[in-house]
Image (cartoon, rainbow, N blue to C red; front, side, top):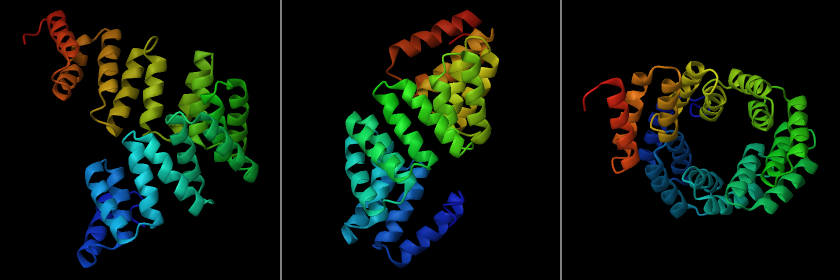
Length: 277
């Protein structure tokens, strides 16, 4: 209950106590792994999932969280295998279905993603998420005009579905309309990494200081994301304050010390702003 409310630290206390009492309990290990995945402690999450599987290889929570873990790690083929099992056992779980379709798209299984999302939509024609999942599959195969139609249907069913607004924003050809769409998505989910990064990309050419604000919000969700660190440096440069981008480029070179291009960019920036090494 605490984990579902987002109280991860407090939830952790109770999970760990449960594991003290029953260290091999499959549910305790599986559910604790879900919390660890949220905290990005992926290696430890994997250890608890392995322990859960040793006790009960058919535990649905363990299968589901292993799918989530593999998805987070970018092992989309593995994620698809686990999601496929989980979806059969929990066909009513719309979030699980969405994750399944998304992992199929990331794995390049586009025809499977399309057929699965289409079948799910037939079962749930009035589901906003089902419409959005089908739209995502349509985008992946290049049927953009149809995808827009289903995104709009999703919003018509549930105007507060932030991902639908964000998806439409990425499909807009008019920049101002795209910005307005993404602004609505951020209004609904202010802390979203993806939405803030996308908004920063939209604003950086014309309103770089506003872009900075969104990239910084994205960093709050993923503090060491190299892509966003580089974008922040570029946005500060575009706004006429290259010196403010220095800490972000320094952080990139700390994270990737062997990346020669990043080191060269850092030295070039230091020379530009007159700061010694």
